[in-house]
Length: 341
Image (cartoon, rainbow, N blue to C red; front, side, top):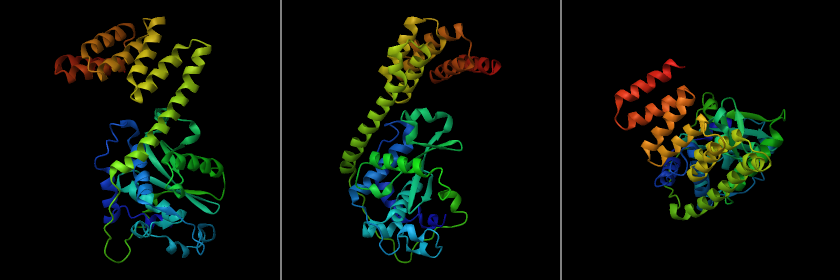
């Protein structure tokens, strides 16, 4: 918890670096549901491009100082690490947490035998964990939130490699009685961050065009993970047996990932076997909305609610009518949805 005192998210040096990276990066366009992940990816790759390097501290390794309350003074502040560009596990974790907290992304520390690991909040509720579409071992469900562990000593390597290693460390440590996890924002209640003395150094983040090369490689890797996950979990079982529920669910995951043509194909498979499947009609209507075909969407919603008057279908219809300016018809659909709850 005391390490949180070094997470100086509002340090002008940290803020300047993080905001330079954030400007001009369309993380929402890359996947609105995964905004925190793409932001974390950009920051990690920017720190790598900047040249932050892990160097173990021979005098005060975390292994020997984790139980010494005074020894925590050896942790570098983020502005100091940005100046020196070399630090050990606690230095790099503190720096990365500071950058993400500055962007409004919650972080946490997990300490274990001789090491400290950081995690960040994906912004996803636990019930929506499947939106990630990656192996369940790659993320952590804590309370009602989904977190991703990152091994910051791998700065300089791809973000996805640091993610893999972080997940492996979490897997080894999660049941270790000597491991302790604390969320930074909660730790701030006891350990308020303070800036080191002296003027804030001006640090320029690397140009996004160079960082973007690293980010694109990480995005390609993440999409490969997602494609593999979807194929293993949903598509391969379909080759062995026709399961309309799995087909429908895989279509929803494709849609959440923004792969609309593949989502449409899955919903059409369901409807080819069962033209009266209200869920598939509703989901296909959503695809029509995304692809700016409101009339087709409205027709599908009305077919769907004619089969199954589910409140969610009326809600979708109402939202579409409202977006077209038909407030009276939208209110009628909304009221029907409320009455049927």
